[in-house]
Image (cartoon, rainbow, N blue to C red; front, side, top):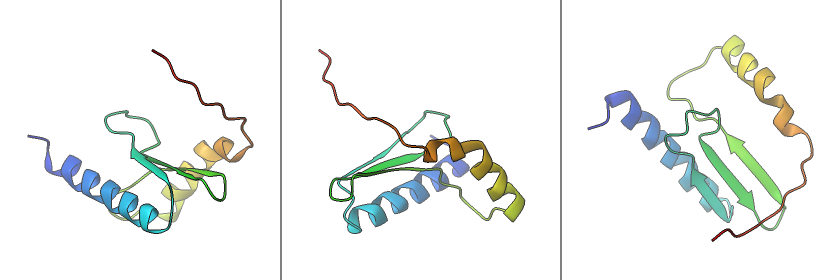
Length: 87
């Protein structure tokens, strides 16, 4: 059985997923067990946006929040995206 912190974080991630789906995001998925800074990703078909989200359970100080934004701001650059099927 996963520990309490894991369950709390997972519940928070599903809350974020539900919110994004209600806002009209088409593809919304958890990056479960990845240990990466991206916990949830979402794609909006209408606006052509891709959103990567790190979900934190609890409060972050402004310095903690700033540090995370600084580490991940490279993701805000423009990317070319391709889709492929492997089998």
